[in-house]
Image (cartoon, rainbow, N blue to C red; front, top):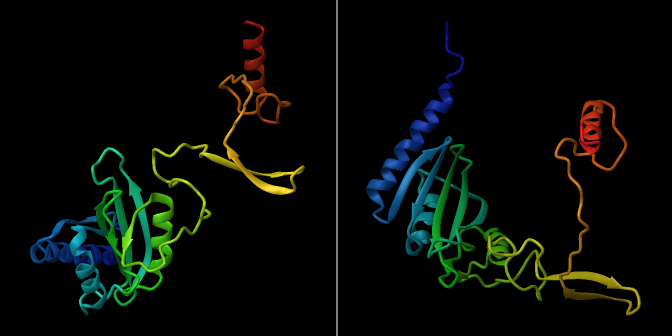
Amino acid sequence: MADLSINPRQGRLEGQLGAMAFTFMSSWPHVSSAEVEKGELVVRIARNHLLEFLSALRDDPRYHFEQLMDLCGVDWPQRAERFDVVYNLLSVTYNRRIRVIVTTSEQEPVPSVHHLWPCATWWERECYDLFGVMFSGQPDLRRILTDNGFEGHPLRKDFPLSGYEEVRYDVERRQVVKEPVSLTQDFRDFDFVSPWEGILTLPGDEKAHEVRQGMKRGI
């Protein structure tokens, strides 16, 4: 009886990706790692050789990664080069994906790839806005999700969850104003039994209600 848990196509794809990983490790001295993770090839390369490598992935007929699907950042505050910049590429020709990762610091820029994939401008602006990663050669490096007066980069792990400023409409002044954030919250009583503390017992929650009442009576 055939083993239906084995997907021949998936096996062939992982074999192809494994062969590509071997090629990259043996042919590109600045590739620090190349391995298949969960059916996807992940390659780490030195930042100053990024453009050369991505150009080969796009133009080499063996690879044909025509589309940049996404560019994002990852913050590792404990590292000297605290940011990973991740490029997710898709080959429509061969129906396979690759993830390319470079590292950088707050001061060192990453070369822009907008001339390889014009859509990269949007992704690079987002990464700059949310993480503060600089991209050299990017002619339109502006914030894209926060406003121009925003301070800081909200997806850095050391950025406070409440932010630094709050925006509200002032009725008396008839305008939108920015103020230092001030969050007030009353103390609440949690019994850690039912998430519906403070409201009527819901159908199906009778047991939790009985337990809660017993706790309040000191039983």
